[in-house]
Length: 152
Ligand SMILES: [Cu+2]
Image (tube, rainbow, N blue to C red; front, top):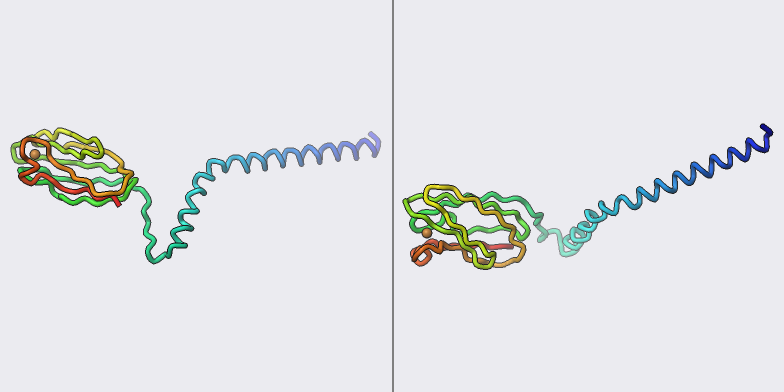
């Protein structure tokens, strides 16, 4: 091998290395495409900060397990407050000898609650507001089996 061909080989290797580097850098840049969905949340944090950190609260959606007792004729608690996007799991336990029901019209929930059992109802309210939950059996609602779900 002459000196000239060694130099050519070195140049070829250097170009090759640079190409590999650029290619992997391109991959690194495109992989965070997924990460950028996470980064996309950052602007809302920035907006919160702009609105004033004194009023900013963490409203990250979270799993919420809420135990509810259903008996003649009440739900306990009868006021439930959650944040929109929370993944709710209501565990409603009936007692007192009657079968009941758990309904929230706006969410299309209409679940029977057999006596003496715990019924699990899962849903994720996305829309803020105050919604009425009630027992749809006979006149149970009028007798007090009613409450409010507030979604903030
Ligand atoms: Cu009832």
